[in-house]
Length: 475
Image (tube, rainbow, N blue to C red; front, side, top):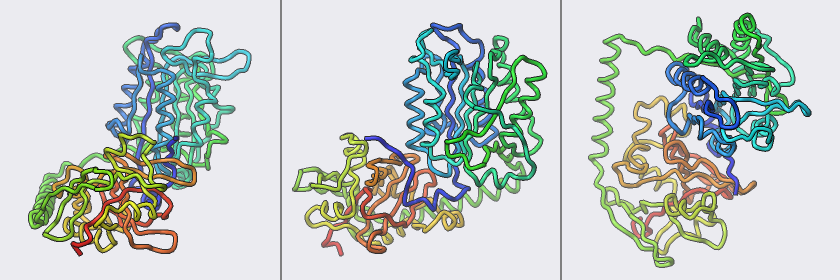
C-alpha cells in the first residue's frame, strides 16, 4: 500500500512559517563503470552540502539530508528517495535536489537523462529520464522545490530559460508555491580540474558564500551564475520555473543563518534562564509518583505495560495492537509496525478495541495526564510563547521519565488508503479521546515530533490514529 503524507488534521500547525523544514537530497557520482570517470562530482555535492548546513539552515540529520555518492547512487536508490520525499515532505516545507554526474541526450527524441552509477552505455532504460523526475514534482507536497543539475544536457529539463529578476518581491516569492530547475548548461559542461570543483559548482558556492545580504532568490542567483560562467566557459547555466508541477509563481530563496551573538551578558542570561527552566521542570517531575504495572488482554493474550500517576488513573503505557473486524490498520501493512507502534484505528474501531475493564480516555483524562508535566497547546503560536513548551512532550514521549512512552505511529487516510508521518523523531503520534467535537470530528491529542510539543487537536472520526486506554474502575 502506498504512502503519501500530504494531508493532516494538524494542517494549521504546519502553515506556521516558523516551523518550515528544509529537505536536501544530493547525488554525486565519480566512479562510473561504463562511462568515463569524473573528477569532482562527489567533491562538489559534499562541499555544497556542507555550505547549506553551516550557513543556510539545512540540517545534517539523515531524516532531512540524504546523500547518495558513487556505488550508492543507483537508479533504484534515487527513485526510492524521490518516493520517500513524497511521503515525508509537508505543505510548508522546502526541498532542494542536487545532481552531479553524467547526463545524456537522446538524439532521436531530444529527451534528457541523468546517468546513475550502474547505467550501461547505450541502454537508455538504465538511465533516469527527465520525465520520470518531472512526474514526482506534483506529488512532493512542499512549498518550494528546487532541482539543481550539474550534468551535460541538463538544460533539456526546461523548455525555456527564465532568469528575469525583480526587486522587492521576496514576500510574494516566499508565500507562493514554487517549482524551479537550475541547469549547468544545455550541452557539454565542464567537470573541472581534479581536486577542485566543477566551474558550475565553484561559481554556485562562491555566490552563496559571498552574499551581501541575508537572502537571495533563485532567479537572481541564476543570473549571477550564468553571467560568471558564460563569460569564461563554453557553457551557459539556465533556470526556469517548471510548468505542470504545481508552481504558483513563487521562488526558492536561500536564507543565510544569522550569526549567534557573542555578547557575554546575553550568554549568561540564556544560561541562567535555561537553569531555572530545568529546575522548574524537574520539580514538576519529582512531584509525580509513578507506579508501573502490566495488563494482559484476555482476548489475544498480548501483554502491555501500564502506569499510574499519583495513585490516579491507570493508563496503558503502550499502544494497543488488537485486531478488530474492521477499522484497524497496520502502518504500511507491516507486522513489525504493529509490534512497535500499535495499530491505527478509526474512532468507532477504537471504541470497540477497548479491552474488558478499560475505556477510551476523555478529554479531561488526557488534560489531567498532560498537566502533571506541562501543557497541551491549541496551536504553534501558543506553544512558542511558553518557555516550557516541550516539558510535557519530553516526559510523556518514548524514553521520557514518566514511563507513558507515547510513540509517533503516524496516520491512516481512508479516502485514498494511504499512510503518513510515522517517525519517532520527526513524525506525529495522534491519540483518540472519547470526547466528540461535532458529529464528524473527535478531540485528539497529538505528539508532534518535529516541534516537540503536545497539541490538543481534532480529527475526522474515519481516519486511523493510535489508541491508549484508562482503567474504568479508576474513575
